[in-house]
Length: 289
Image 1 (tube, rainbow, N blue to C red):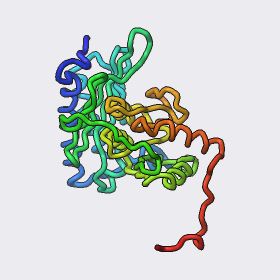
Image 2: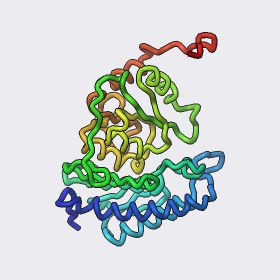
Image 3: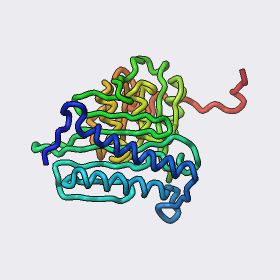
């Protein structure tokens, strides 16, 4: 099946946007009445809700109907692996912990990957819908990034000290994750670091200039597929921490407006090498102003 990605009027993204909007409407219905939460594994604190499953069922059913030959990888277990030229990465509810606690920061995210004949895999279209704000982010490779139909661009902040950043922490094994050290150091060097609880929305916030940068460890393809393309199409840069090429399976993501990319890459290099780490102040050192 030939897919007109990047064609006039966002041929793919427009069609998928309606699917995302319908899934978002479904999520809001669950959100309004409250949901029962479960855990994905014994001793785990990864939440899953009936809303996650219902949203994924809606999305996957619609994708299969519209593009029956496309592969699909969904966070809640939907799989179709046939070595198709195209593969969808589906996050039916990014921000499940927020959702389960009644905190209105979550979204639906879908990214389309194309496996080119030269062996290169690239994300070619993405849609991200925040139903609590009615914000629809769309992009197709080479066509720009849009929010509710208006072109968006990354920020122009060039100094780390003037930047607002975003990051996230895993819902399990936090004690084994080194990100708290990065969080402390970057909080001291910037205007602040936000932890919203949705990596997809964090990337969208970089794309539209609300954040100047975002970093996180160990994300999954469904977390990043749409957001990474949004950032790139909005004029930003996405790499691994050391500046090397980001791939959908990468275990690190560093997304910035591009101007901060060299600064943040150097920051990570210094911190990994133990250079420039700030001393932790004692309570006696802290004076209320």
